[in-house]
Image (tube, rainbow, N blue to C red; front, side, top):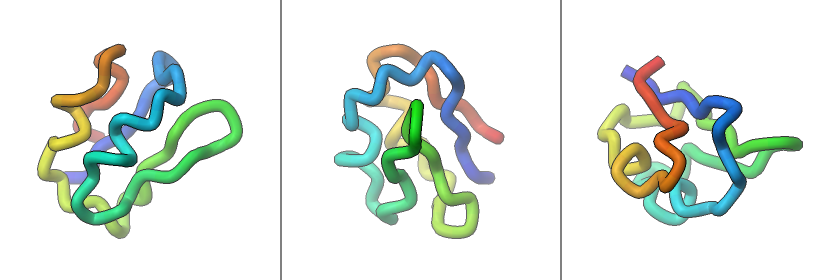
Length: 56
């Protein structure tokens, strides 16, 4: 299952640096996850300081 990033994102970049698939990129107001690339591993959830990442 792919992950998603909520509006709580502060654009710190921790999730993008952690993603083993490279599925996370910088959007206009927050980071975004490409569901086609996301492995659903949850690595990003563990490093997000805001708890802004959840299962989609």
